[in-house]
Length: 137
Ligand code: TYD
Image 1: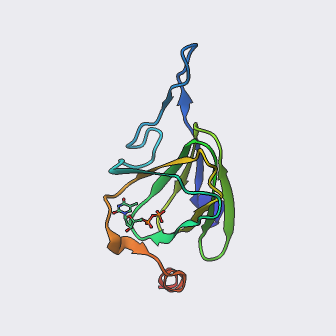
Image 2: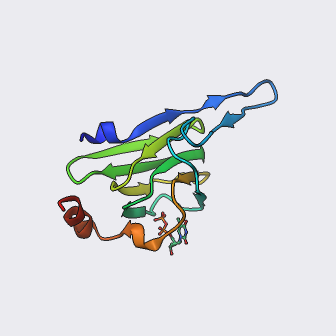
Image 3: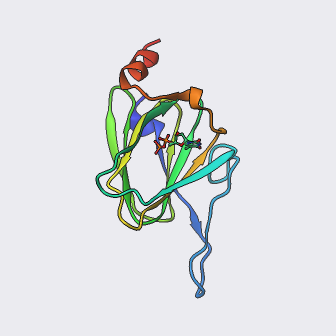
């Protein structure tokens, strides 16, 4: 499958009014195509840092830069694509078994990650060669 068909750019509703913005993100097939079991967020990573560098056998994710900007490079073993997360209403859906790097964090970047699974170190593939081997099984 093409990488552009595997990932999805999501656009969340803004129910804001004169008091400010209110962005709603509902799980279980509404805005997010999975039940959200885990939320984590990354901030204080500066422009030189590369995070991620792993693939997940079980977890699907949605990434949202609720503040600031960062980039995500996704790789399915055949193609790569760079996506800039630069709006609080924008989400990036990543299915299982994609290699991902997060980098170019702005000073004010807060990268919110919604995950379909609880944390399990065993479902992370942290070596790129192992990832490619597993894709070919
Ligand atoms: P890591 O996977 O390196 O973060 P990133 O997604 O930026 O690559 O995680 C850093 C450490 O935190 C690592 O020891 C695993 C641990 N961790 C948890 O215990 N639970 C979690 O949900 C996450 C994302 C990480």
